[in-house]
Image (cartoon, rainbow over all chains, first blue to last red; front, side, top):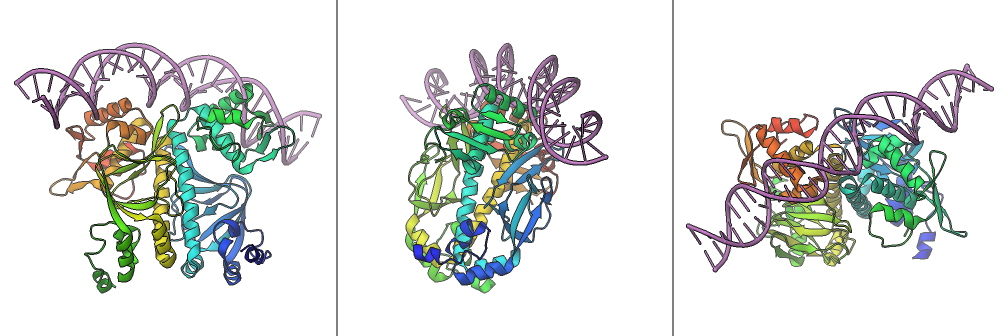
Length: 247
Length: 247
DNA sequence: CCCTCACTTTGATGTGGATCAAACGGGGCC
DNA sequence: GGCCCCGTTTGATCCACATCAAAGTGAGGG
């Protein structure tokens, strides 16, 4: 079993996180070769729109580096972010050509793409791909449901604290030397945070200032966050205090 | 193709909507027999809790009749509905034993259940089941994203109008004789609607009264809704006015 | 080095929906 | 028929967050 994992040719599907999460974890060598044959990379810079709502999308993809967001916009301009894709997350619907929301690069971004139709063919030949995608989609649905609780019932301060803990859990490099400092860079502007949280950017800014004033977070520059005590932050989220730090 | 569909033994998996949506649409006779062997029914009455958050769930299921809801509750009692399951919707995660939210019957309810482990085995043997479940889960994720826009950015009146249009789309019997009346029963109390919409029950009630006062809806009793002109309702949702009535 | 521009912070005021409180209505049961 | 109870409606008040407005900050470019 472990020898089999070691047998995966590391040079194939090289820096592509999809190997770990969506497709390749249980792939055999010949399947990896098929994936190699249909994959290609695309890069975007911060702020660039990848696809507009309603456009055709002829590929599925996995995020290599950077952050992408899915956003819905109402006619009068109100906007709500409905998805935030970090490295190794999957983008696209194998069986559907169009998307229902704008996809935007919120930071510089690299995607590992697979053309849709060959990817579909490969799904037919390789049953565990669909099973793995099902797992990932169910995880995303669970995340969406947490997000709904946040949007529907949490206060502005709880929303900010929850958001920071979500980003910290995925991004933080943490400093176990001595005490438990957790530090990371925010990959979003205050406006994008507001779109994520269903707030205005002014409220986001005020609540960040409030958390800083109360010593829950430290701000080094506008974007770099240091959390001196993760439990203190968790107390602000409104979530049950189970499963310890970054579990 | 159509002859093949007719070849499905109608007496198998008899009144079970899972046949149409999750599993059986492309099943052969022998696969249907395997499904028959592991399926069973469970009934619940309105208000009954099916599973509590954190409990083990040893089955997956499909809603036969009635309505079930998925709800998250914060420690201080704030509640947010995060899923609403109508007939033919699927419940459960094949690969996970526990659930992260309470599952409750909001009306009298019948489920068609499959024990989890045999269902998993069947998924391994029958690749199109995972593909179909992936499709359904992606649809649910799209619905969750619409819901997030509603929770984050819509006004109370828009939330109510959107909710009514969602229920109408799935439930309504409509009366094409003469004009386009659309009528249906609300499967939820005002309180459950409030949990769905991220509002209080008082606000739900006030906004319903408002829509009634303005002639957008008629109320016959507390629960029966008549919509004299669906376009009028759609104008209140804040959504783009594309894809006509009940498309 | 300073100017610019995009992002952010802070301040003053307004308001939609929450909260607290009371009355209403109708179905089931004695 | 009358009473009770649960779900619902309506009213009065409050407050968290939106809105409108202005000033601060810092990175990049001339």
